[in-house]
Length: 312
Image (cartoon, rainbow, N blue to C red; front, side):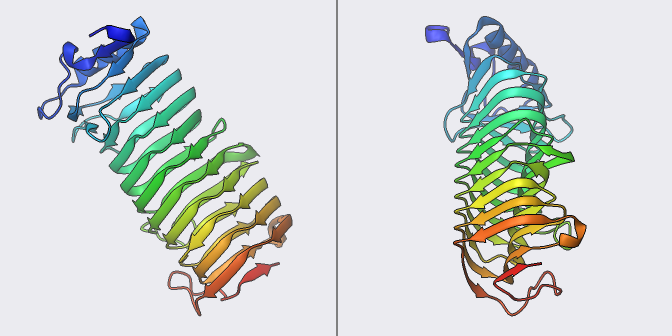
């Protein structure tokens, strides 16, 4: 069980598909592996728990496509709080208000993980996280909801069937964020929460400055593929935005220094809108974009004017 610094959780009594609460055994295995500086390998199957806290300085890996940790109906969630240097790889997370919550932490990496059947896939608050090649599906609210981040790197993920948003990068007060969102596939984003634009967006950046949104494939969002609201020095480039229900790319309200370049927009009720200069919006460049197949009206927002590119 201890070969090559790998600790097999099964030798510590963690088993999949038992239908019984494995929290005590799994928490002990996590803590033992972290204390010994070993990689923890999880068994295949569904591991039911009523809550977990991940330690730092640890790598945890499942059997690709076959390991899932699921919250019990009355259980708590999965938490990474005030930790550093944690890698979670090839693990499915399911159920709960948030399938995984990461707070006040740094150097957290999620690789090839799966998130489903929760309100939010990954909820981030004041943390530095890399999320790569993960799959998010069937989430009632959002795939990734990040507040006051320490610079996220979100790349190569597949996000599908979310109730209100794909990726949200928000701050409680305007300031540098520096997150980079590249090469993700985002599709089928609904607006169950209603409203006139706060929901239904593939990527939504709010009060977060210096964010890069590049080379993503974003399709079938109820409202907007990429929506910048009150951002500074943000770049939106090289994205393919298909069948947006309202404005495909939006830079709105108190923005300053938006670059919107080399995007392809095919199908939207309005292509690109750079607006609300009455609310402090200023300084944007819009270049090299292709905008086509603008619909005569928006089914979700009747106030939308069918134009290709609008600048106020």
